[in-house]
Length: 194
Image (cartoon, rainbow, N blue to C red; front, side):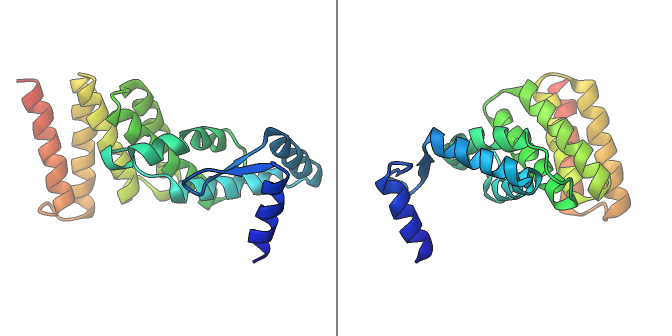
């Protein structure tokens, strides 16, 4: 009830506007005042962490069905990726998730160079926190290998896909669907090269 009342006051003074999808646009003056308040309070890093966590929970992986939602959230993703939080494990994993999802959308759009850069960053963070054998790390590696394949960088794609298969074979059984998917991806790399 308090939130509805507060939003009503802010809308009445045109500090925020509500769009047809019930999203809000905040007036630039309100953004500036809020930023100054956060800076003065010395709580910038805490709000940065919260922003990263919120965006990562709501940021879809880039594919056909998420295109509109992704496009609406892209400026927010770029904004929070620039923030310096408190450096907690959750914050760094949230950053890796945003990077991974954004890379997926760049790949879907055919922006392979951007996809590659974001996947590499996601892999680095995930390796550091979760380890090389974690499924999230392996997922980012598989997507990076696919990106290399789509760019015609066969050798790099083959090396990364082979490495992924070895990890899957060591961590889970060879007949596991993830291992078989990786083997199929390596076969696609070989097929693409004739």
